[in-house]
Image (cartoon, rainbow, N blue to C red; front, side, top):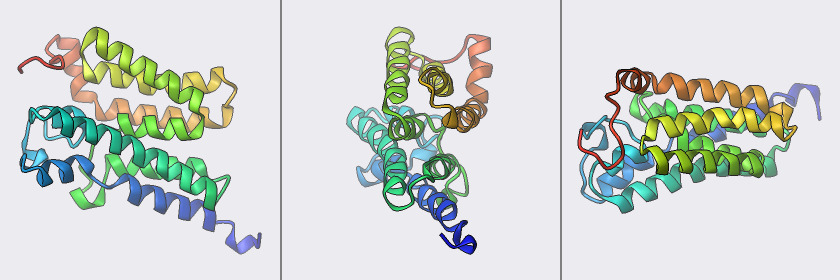
Length: 200
């Protein structure tokens, strides 16, 4: 490849990832279903957990699936069009979800999108992510804690499976997940974090 075009793959991967990741499915789905503006409901977050607060489990499930799918699709498409730049697509999709330009950079917390990313990068790591997330969610019914634990499992499992090129990028994304959950962490420490299915 011409030296002047070495930047093309990474930039294209970042841009494609960002714009796929920035699609606010939670907002679009709840609005289309007549459930109101998700940003004015519950925590104001655009993810599946807050969609669940509308009382529409189907909408929450659809939001989770689509947020996961956009992360997976960004990495997959870049693996076809610009192979070797999958990590850039992953970073773009994740940042797009957490900081979408369409919502004045006020997006979700990235747990579902990160799962899709991890599945696309290395499916065994994605399987670990899913098991940690779902097992803790089923056992503790604390969405924030299970999501943060799943995010942390991503770089750990990447190291375990020998996917060392992914360890630092996934660690960086996991730290952003923790940052986005900082108010949840405060509530966890105070013992006031709500459980899924309970009234606040």
